[in-house]
Amino acid sequence: MSVKEDGFSGLEAAIVLIAFVVVAAVFSFATLSSGFFASEKAEDITHTGYKQASSGVYIDGSLYGALSSDGHLDTLTFYIANPETGLDQDLAKMVMAYTKSDTPTPMSLTLGATPDSHHFSIGSGGTTSAILMPGTKTRVNFADLNGPTATGWFSIEVKPYSGASYLLHRFLSEGYEGGIIR
Image (cartoon, rainbow, N blue to C red; front, side):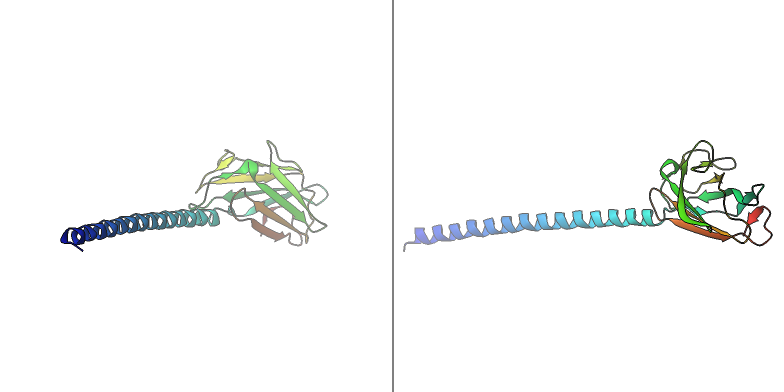
């Protein structure tokens, strides 16, 4: 082998080494980029999960009821609130399930202009918008419930479009004639 050929073999080896380094750099950049992308997506999912977990509505304050002439619970009024950390709640997509002691099958109520046996209404004392923003509350009105009499019970399950459901269970005390339900 001549000196010219030895130098040429060294040059070929250097070119091959540089090619390996360049390929390794490209693969490491791709690996790092996909790692950054995956960790960014995981962070977004964590924040979204936190928002959804804390976005359920809750009953704020007392329940007020009125009886019909035959002694059955006829109307209910209460406030629902959206926590500061929650998501906007579209009340038009919210369902409230009402169950009473003498009829175990829940009755689904949706938002309507006026409360009746199939709809609840909102407003008067809080927001009247169909969107419940974080940190706000609105009054909910039920009517024509034909509910339990004194010593009976009822449940209301508030099912927001996004977030966890809220279950409320109350008994009417003996001698209840209307007003606050404890």
